Image (cartoon, rainbow, N blue to C red; front, side):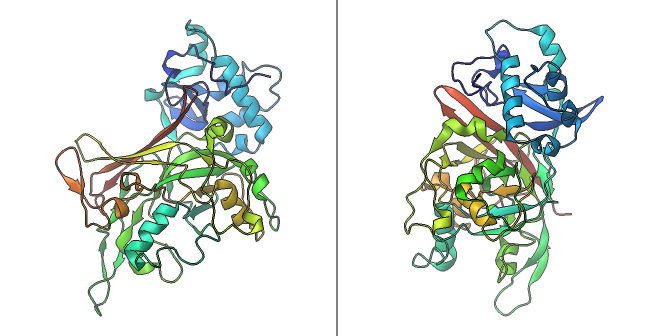
Length: 419
Ligand code: CA
């Protein structure tokens, strides 16, 4: 059986070599362009692959309804199940593999240069849940607000802390967001003030798209959990720290978070990420039985955050990694469903801010500037404590194994002045 992850595979699409979108990746997304309504695509190098056109060339082994690729979201395709995802990736790999000789006729039928298309929100997201699973992030925030002694709350090492976010304001890369307005606390004993947030921040996260639901009442075990995930994307969980600080007691984040969250347009499948598995943290205390796992459940994916002031060059402000998760995807899914909560196809789960142990790996301005006390220098000579109007925040991510690169492209969005 053909293995799309085979590191020796190369593509006749020359730009694929060394690209985030190598032939070993083959992610899924939704594109549109003039004359073409929104429909499903894959990516190879600097080209988009039209899946409806490509599927006409798939072998007889591929036994699904091609019209799923004409849908304006991936939900119809994802609902076909893992065998269909794997079969599609295999057929794409067979179509796109080969030596150096270009195939202009085939290219003209199925490829479109990426710069000519607009990428759209890849899935219709039903529900969005955000976790808080990086131990360095939770520790940093805890130290800032509670002191070193009580940095981690008593529950933190026993369960993957999370909250229900809002799906309606999850937008695709390239969508700009206005600085939110809201209540923030004033000086002691004064009433709160209303106005634009002064502490807008990014959160470096990975998102996971649910590919297989579970019935209400049924728990998903850690062993089954990854089987319920279609793939991963980059995720910026925008946060207004001053609004958050005033509003979050006692029920958690609300308006500080739901003014917008940005996801990358390409979903990289769990199959393509298989070679990047690494062990997670040693968990002490050992988790309760329903959260225990075997095998390597973390993924070695390099993540970077850049800030680009209006009209200026970008500056990298953070280098982190998805492997810095204390609670793995498997544990998060098992915990989410242990009470019988049903996940549905297209739901979005997010990792929580991904900070590593080094200050250069902190995944938010809150941590990078240590609550505004240590401004972060930018290449244009300016500095940032938090995100200013006109700043574009860009997250990029990729892994490299056996000389093969598999990446996510980028997620970018700009903060516009308050409305
Ligand atoms: Ca978050």
